[in-house]
Image 1: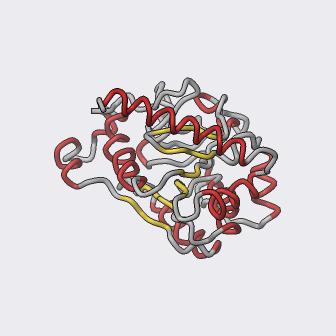
Image 2: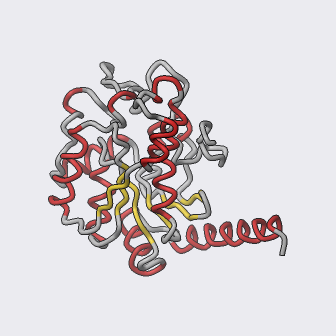
Image 3: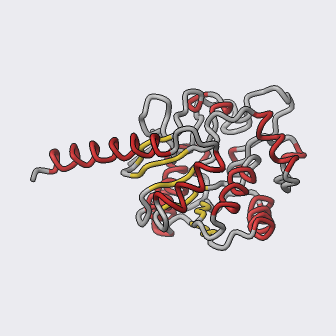
Amino acid sequence: MSQTIYKSEFRMALEAGAQALEAALDGLDARDAIKRLVKDIYPGEACAVSSFGAESAVILHLIAEAAPDTPVLFVDTGKLFDETRRYRDDLTSHLGLTDVRSLKPNADHLAADDPDGLLHQSNPDLCCHIRKTLPLISALRPFKVWISGRKRHHGGERAALPRVEIQDGKLKLNPLYDWPREAIEAYLTDHDLPAHPLVAEGYPSIGCNPCTVPVSDPDADPRAGRWADSDKTECGIHIGADGQVVRSGET
């Protein structure tokens, strides 16, 4: 079988899987969708990916309710705020998550492409690629589906976000895809979930330290502080509304 035919058949199988998953979750809210995914449809074959950022406690709380032993992949780029690492530890303990895996970039990749740690200044796409995308792709290999906390209210590429996607040969579920900001804030309050400490300092979205700034306008796009003053909107581990991987710095 030629590689082209194999890729075509694999893609068709993935598309069928995405349609089947969408049908299996029809009518379920985020809580029940996550529970069915990790307990009934893909037991032992599903994971979550979390930045432990400003809104992450909601999706992680739902996962902890469904199955606290669900693997949670956290990409530690080496450029994160210290507050984010501490928040990861605190929230993990608070929710009782038992399998949070911290991923780090490959040392050889850093030595080759970012020896002085300043790649984010000249090529932020490539920086994200070696520090986030490659470690995540490697860690996702054992799984068939991953859970993301992305939402349409973030705007930009996420405005037309579907509930079920296909990316890098995996299915991806966005259980909170249609939750507005008000619903997120209400859930955090109702469940008394601890906030990321930088939220109180004006960070509505929190990524790497050099590429994230506080936002003074409370009504601004939630991701306005990410790669401010540039046209970059995604780190590269997700796909855009057109179905294409947002990873312009791939090499």
